Length: 107
Image (tube, rainbow, N blue to C red):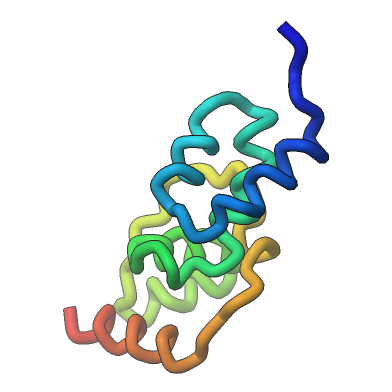
């Protein structure tokens, strides 16, 4: 069976940008599909859910994570990161981050 090239996959996945369920399914197919679709999936993380916040925290430098922990902000970041997800983000809304941090601090 012949395999699609990453360029072809990229073109296909661009059409799925607004279909988060299908795009997430593409991430789970195999490594090539994952590498091609994950950057589109994470492009605008606000389209998906707020649980991505812990992944963003895991992308912070260790010093920043330790600073949060020292100040009583405990966020589980036990999962190993496969990609630098922050580098894929093209939309980062300060107001939403402020709201998420506020919700986190209220807990």
